[in-house]
Amino acid sequence: MINNLLRRGLPALALAALPFLASTPRPPPTRCPRRRPPTAYIPVQSAAGAPAAAGVRAPLPLFEAIDQLPIATEHREGYKRDLYKHWNKGLIASDGCDTRREVILSEAVEAPQVAAGCKLTGGSWRSPYANLIVTDAGRLDVDHFVPLAEVFDSEQTPWSAARREAYANDQNSPDTLIAVSAASNRSKSDKDPAEWLPSDGSYHCTYAATWVGTKLRWVLAADDAEVQALLGLAEDCPTTTVAYETAL
Image: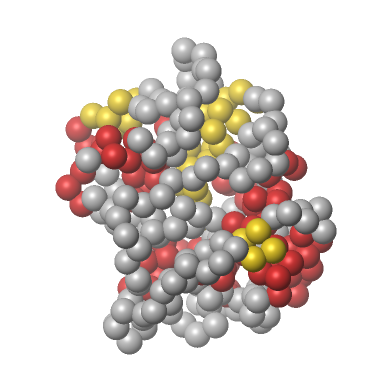
């Protein structure tokens, strides 16, 4: 079963033999292929506990997608990270890997070895925020593309515990979770695009589209400064589109 996850990684890149972080030439500013879940989309539970309707939306130009974001003032009061239970057992409960490790396995450029307890050795990954190659799984974080604190800020009505757990472990979208270098993840922290952008400018169009798509998928609001920052990015991304599958 683990091999099924490994086969969803990106194409192989040439790497040195020892773990390191190294800058690589920037690729063209196109969206990188991401993993797709091995199972059909499973709708999350609504706050009332019943399955909610879901559907794939046709790709939208980035400007149009931004216009669909609900606008609301953020509300941080009462936020605690443990409101969003993670990591759970992942897509394959029997593989011994939690959601975090499943994401890391699925995004490997070169597959690591997997020992008992889902201990990972070897392998390589491309961290897109800074366009780095990482050759040590211990130097990776799995980032919630829209950070948990930002999700709390952006919930239009308080979510149920089940819905928050569904977001925090969402592998039914290729975009909600992403393996990146620990350094870039901690630089980003809980900032939105008005406060932080990846250091690799060639990734900005993809970053904006993924941010907007994730917010639309989970029906999350955006504040005025965030929207203005996204619109500014969209001016430089005329061919960028946003595709998402609703989780409500």
